[in-house]
Image (tube, rainbow, N blue to C red; front, side, top):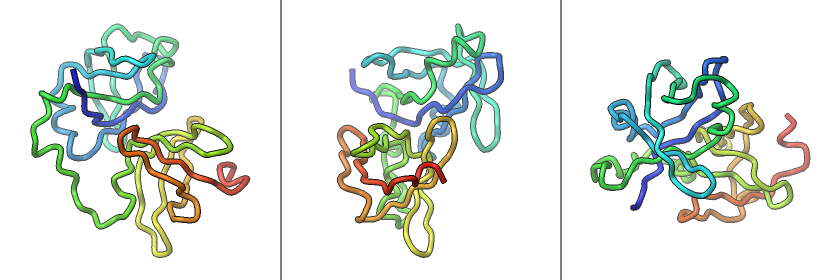
Length: 171
């Protein structure tokens, strides 16, 4: 079965097993109507049934069978998927926001020296350049997206290889 990535989980929220999630804008309605989604765990897609969704900015999700923070820890920073046959064609059209790197939301940022940094949560259009908001070790960091730092983009693997200056992630 083929899957479409519609977003990703972030970090846990509170002690009741909830997690924050980011869903791509064109998939929000599908996610809110879904009874279950699939999370990538140990190289395979595993179903997780949605018990409750709440929140305004970041969505906060309670999955069935995830009752506390300890049970939610393994599902942090995981891709959220729906089966391809459940995603209508019109949802696959990425809105053209005029950004060169705007399609990288949900991609994994990987530094050639440090390894995996985290998922791209958002791409901001700043006057000088585009900036990615990346979930790095439970906090959001800003990483410039320009040809000096971006070495390659692998759309099939949904990975962005970068060469970041020393200390950038500590700002």
